[in-house]
Length: 177
Image (cartoon, rainbow, N blue to C red; front, side, top):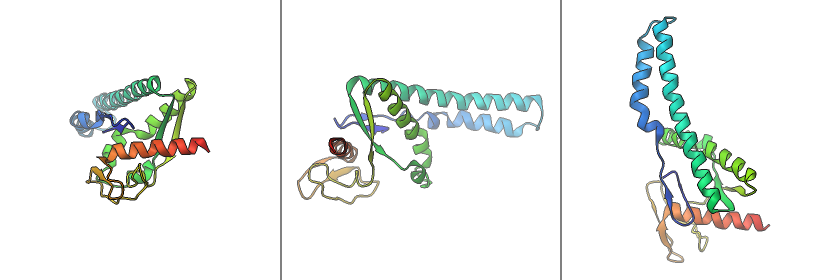
């Protein structure tokens, strides 16, 4: 999912790039087959630019609409301060992370929240997916393990929901200081 709210509600990732990969592949192949400097190559390059531009616009529209919905529901929104540059070093996850464009989303959220006299605050990310939100116990789990089970307090819930609750708890504690 793109994100999970502290209520447990997942926000699905539309995967605009993944859905358009075939179209982009065809457009790129068309460009590479044309002779450099020709009118037909310039036309093919323009088609490729339009395809990339459409994906960018779809992603921007999704982010703006989601931010608007969230700001109507909440006065303060806490989100993880992710190290996206470090995360995209993983070749298995890079394309999906960049397709979600979390960095762009957080910039839009912060700006729009300030404009609406609300708050969008970043919370330090380390440990939020491993730590139990209720008792604070560290429960080590791999990326493939999607369920959080705390041996200390018995809390059982989806890993992303646990992280969202932990981010909310951390955000409130940071704001109280």
